[in-house]
Length: 275
Ligand code: ATR
Image (cartoon, rainbow, N blue to C red; front, side, top):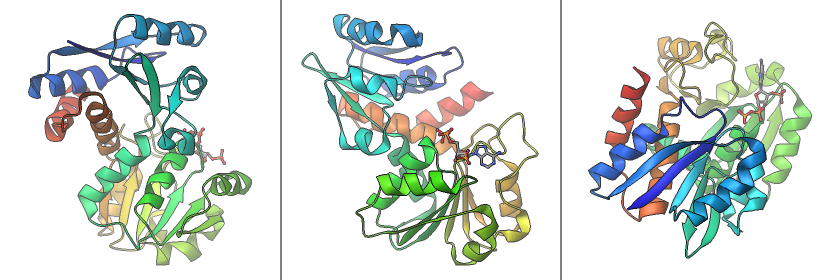
């Protein structure tokens, strides 16, 4: 049987086991995906342990996504470009790290909104989540990405890591949103502003959101943030963060098993785990 799991600290509330066990069952693959509570000081031993126990792979979540990188035999381009790993594949006794967060998010965005090539995108935030998403947007050949951040220097640092593509990359402050939003096709929030318990917070004043654009939030707790609620009221197409979670898992499942992930079943399993 396939042995899979997720290493994190804390880990008790992870929805990944529910999502992946349903997927294994639906694909008629004998196996099990288990939550693994691993403290930072035990991460190296945990990786060795997973190899010794015959695991086929595992996810890593907070706080291990960066620390795991130096413990693996090999890193995929996605992991190098994102500077973090969320998925480890074990094959022939060797470990390889991938990052499926950004490509997972972009796959869900594309599914909800259509082709992304040529689009003008504004990204709020310049942290790890933004990096993974911008990496994936560049692969989709979007026309431009403007990174808006409180700390402008962090936006510039991020863009320096990602240059060398045909997409125009710019940085901006929140004061410049008024100028850049009217041109924007897709607005994506990667900051934690609006996340539970601060559900009354929003990163962008509603009046600044152009009517009818695509507005997306990586936050999935709550499922509909204030940003999305206000954007919807302005006739925008809105895309929440749950799809990112489901599709990062779908890619991981496909890397481990070589079988297409039963995405809609995984989606309903996660929703059920929330209720
Ligand atoms: P993550 O991995 O979730 O992206 P991170 O790397 O800590 O987390 O990045 C958090 C991002 O959210 C940063 O861009 C941060 O802005 P600063 O670089 O200026 O700190 C942004 N952020 C967090 N709280 C914010 C707030 N209250 N208002 C605006 N931006 C915020």
